[in-house]
Amino acid sequence: MKYWKTAKYFAVAGLVFSAAVAFEQQTTKSSFDPGIRPITPASVQAEKDAEDAWFAHVQFLASDELKGRRTGTPDFIHAVEYVESQFKAIGLKPAGTDGYRQPVGFRSAAVDAGHSSLEFISPDGQAQTLKIGSEASLSPNKEGEVPVTGSAVFVGYGLVVPGLGLDALQGVDLRGKVAVILLASPTSVHGPLKAYFRTTASRWKALKAAGAIGLITIPEERQSAGGPGRGAGGGGAARPGGGGGHPLPLQLADPALNGLEGARLNATWPGDSAAAVVAG
Image (cartoon, rainbow, N blue to C red; front, side, top):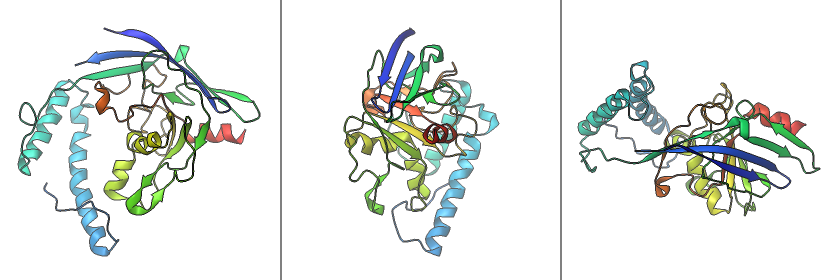
């Protein structure tokens, strides 16, 4: 059953948002150790070998043959069968309710661009409205009307990686505020760590712990080359549906499995659009 709810967001001396949202319930072996270690020629080669093996799987799963492997389609099942075969090949013990499989619930969300808005308010009170879909995208994480009041705070990469001595949030007061982050990584974060921290969900854990009530991501230039409707990753923050009328990626329906649980605002702001507003 599909129904429309309105989610409104407000940010004092920062950003103002509103969004109308629709939610629909839907039911090669590697010895590489991804732990943190000193960089040596041997470790670099081991990482490259692991990346090559990993990329071979990506090439198949991302191939045209699977046609996007949308959840629930025959192409998705084909991908599932491939992954199952790889699990068997490396000796993983099944732990699902049906072999390696286990049913989970999903929901989809879409933004009604005609009834959504995003407005940047500078400290001097000047307001600039951004066009949803081309200059910014919204991916609401809550149903119904969700008022959000707070300032927007830029926190760089927003990364907290104790093993590398990284803490972009140290000394930053995010309590009751919206965090603005660059969805990229410094050179010290590479390999599996970079793959993990490239998503908004992975960074939200630290932002939420610091008291943030929402986040706005500015993706890398190569991620946003097709506009805000492409590739920021994690929770569907930057995919069609952030304002263009196409459905957002499916989200796990169980709140306990939602990597962005607690985020009352989840938006994406392409670098060129952000630069234009800040410069103005």
